[in-house]
Image 1 (cartoon, rainbow, N blue to C red):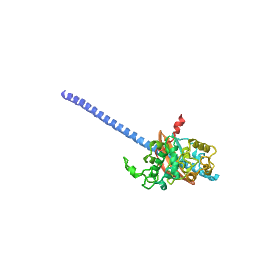
Image 2 (spheres, helix red, strand yellow):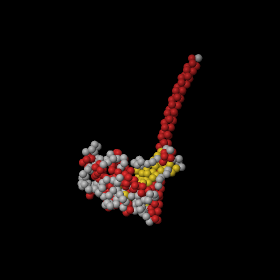
Image 3 (cartoon, helix red, strand yellow):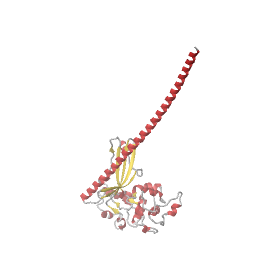
Image 4 (cartoon, one colour):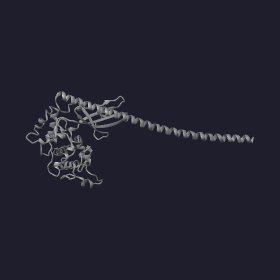
Length: 351
């Protein structure tokens, strides 16, 4: 009888141990399953993000191909009409619309004429260094700074900014009258040195002496650094502020706001027949304009493509600098960053 009781006790004890072991095995399995699920989710998300990123990049490169096609067609149209001009009525300059994608997202792209902007790299004229005279490009930039609507600069401040930017670009280390070279920048905390070379990006302006974020934001839509060997400004695509900066030689005051508006209205209406006719307009007539004439053109070779794609609620942007040489289109630079403001067509269409 006692042997039977011991056996039954052992059995009950073994049942308890088995239950504990079963619970431990269940807990371990549950922990392993949770870890596996977490690793699976992370791997799935990584894979999905990688797939969407590759797909988005393919669409953005496709936007480059579409832009190249538009620029090539424009070149062919100019050949057929025997005119060599680029204006805002051409196919590449039309208002862009979003393209719906099969994945449920959209793609958007717009072309901007970089030769409709002032080229900052034209300011490093060594002939004007250390003197009180200014090259036609420097005079134009002084006027452009004063023409900015959201940055109220007088002529003295505009000259200081112009000379500081010119010192940043030129190869020497001799500061201009209102400029700044290594001695100034090394004294800052943290210290750095000026570029003393053509600018690679408009954002370099933020490192230049006398430049403020307010001036930079107002100036940014009207300036470029492409091409690095500056090309002329296209009168048919220049913004109103750039047109106001095209005053007669020796006059450091920009055209008035009303004169700038009249130039834009004239261009949108009858347009400018030729560069010669443009320089004979009333705002220039009777004055020397040989200096600004060397800065102007009617055709363009450098364009900025701002493209955006959204797939699976993920957005990616690409900014491409395109150069057109006859029917050949080259991509000089790609920037995958939000350096330029760009409208959101999806948001606009939903309103």
